[in-house]
Amino acid sequence: QVQLEESGGGLVQPGGSLRLSCAASGSIRSIHAMDWYRQAPGKQRELVAAITSAGGTNYADSVKGRFTISRDNAKNTVYLQMNSLKPEDTAVYYCYAVISSTVVLGRRDYWGQGTQVTVSS
Image 1 (cartoon, rainbow, N blue to C red):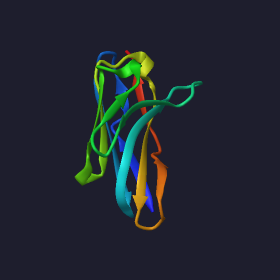
Image 2: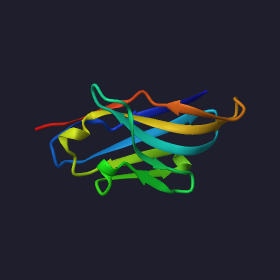
Image 3: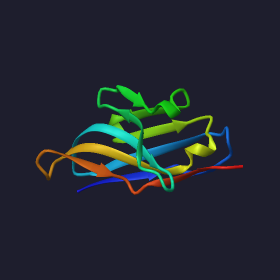
């Protein structure tokens, strides 16, 4: 089927940077939207950034000017460059994609397993 694999999380000091990657693999026909969500302890999962297949982007107000989402369609990969990180950015970050596969008719939603980002001194 289709899998999403995230990488790049870790521990960083306030003001630091991290780059998350999410690679889609499997029976892929085409990838539509690719998004990053995050979930902090005791809070609901929230949309951080989104990018369409044409490259249009959208960001949560809390990360505008600090985070940048991009994608490499040839590699079926989406990235999240996170700069000027704050302790409140600490969360598990999840990759999400809408994908048409060669096996299942129609578009389906897929989630990655999540990667921990901790911002602390």
